[in-house]
Image (cartoon, rainbow, N blue to C red):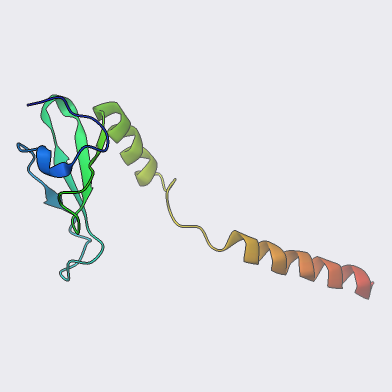
Length: 98
């Protein structure tokens, strides 16, 4: 296999066996594909653009990402600004009432 680098065209990873997430759905919309590469690297690509760039991760980077995902580090948060604004507004009204 030739030298790999982050952002290289995914199509040049000829030995890659791409796997689509089972959470991607059947319509071919927002799909992410993953391939385990020689030497433990992991490649990620957008299935809508299979010849586009691939993001490459070392085994240690991928393991750290998976651990963070399992721990909820990357979960979407509620609109923090909106919650804070409502809370601050309530505090102002509470102070003016007393």
